[in-house]
Amino acid sequence: MLAENPDDIDANRVMGLALFASGDKAKFQQAANYLQHYVDKAPDTDPLKASAKESLEYLKTAENVKPEKTQPARGTAGRKHP
Image (cartoon, rainbow, N blue to C red; front, side):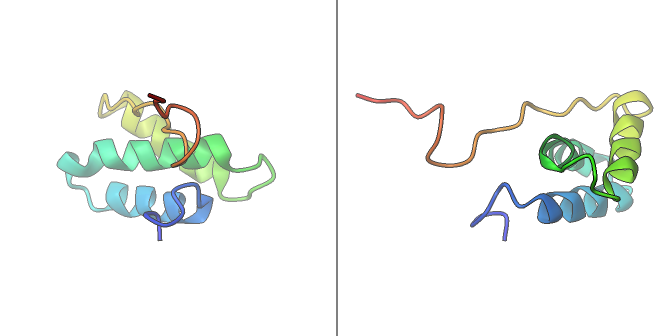
């Protein structure tokens, strides 16, 4: 699903929380990346945004994991032209 639509906020939230809940520290970087993308894109009215922010904050402070910069969607900014 994310391969076809990387900006799907629900898929980013689910993937981020699943990787976080796995407890596998090797997957925490990916979890932080997905959660950051979700937090960046989800509207403030999204009732699940607060819990995602809490999980992301935990990763940042307790696990010292910093999300990588959110990538633009495929086919948009950042494409090099010859």
